[in-house]
Image (cartoon, rainbow, N blue to C red; front, side, top):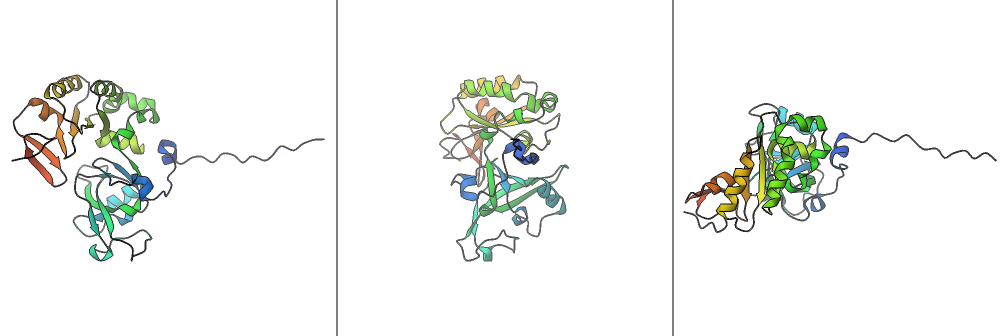
Length: 268
């Protein structure tokens, strides 16, 4: 007796976003944000990009609409989240949502275009976040990029060496800026002259000596490295802290502050 083999449909090609970082599921803000507010430099995948509200008022510029249609990712800025209901916002385009629900939480985000000067500061509704990527989740993702691209872009080629240096100092780290965006989204935005920007998680004090040693080691890499130490109260540039001035600039959600100690910012 001849048995007819079961029909097996041809595999459906996976979308580019799915190949690079998993399926674009509408997973909801609680799952996407792990029950927490997004932090500076986090990448957010928006279910409803048209719901963004420019800080300057009005609608989204056309360049921002084009960017978000192609790649609906935004970067969280260093500012306070804003709470408000539909009556408190100037008619944003919303995702489907019960207007009688609790007030929305609006996250400060940045949209960047391909051309110089194309930067938009906006607020994004937390309910429209489908997925989030923290900088430390981007470590090792250069393996998802084409090897030939990693080889010719210095900021990407230096990631492995940076990982070894930072690990020696027992700091959790992650790439931010152009390299971080490319690692998270797969969009080739890192240029041959782009610096490699890093965030170093430092909830506990780091000694000036250790900071100086790390800064010197990073400065020997064949790409400019701009690192910031993220404390519980904000961020301070590694180079500034390592230089040992009496007063430091601490970047906080309420703007820059002059402090003597970024871990105990009594300030001036």
